[in-house]
Image 1: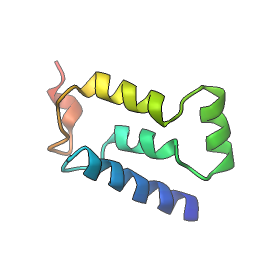
Image 2: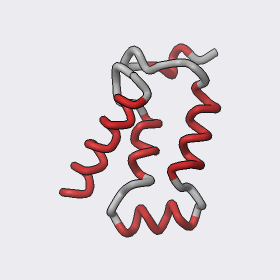
Image 3: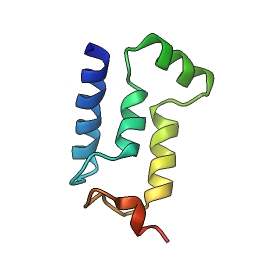
Image 4: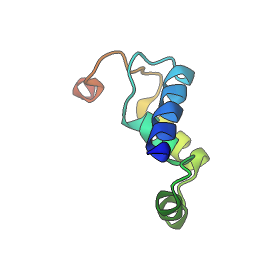
Length: 77
């Protein structure tokens, strides 16, 4: 529906912001923080996961790395 379409659009915007070649799970996590879906918004609020918290975790985990292929997790080591 509309909420999923908006989440995909938001994930694409985060992909562009991070200058990545592909959408990855972190883009969806960030997009989820903007979701108009009430149940998802309530869950994230309960877990205290807002955009700032998720963004900090993403930046900590990925450092200066970019998503340049369809399986970026395979490069972790």
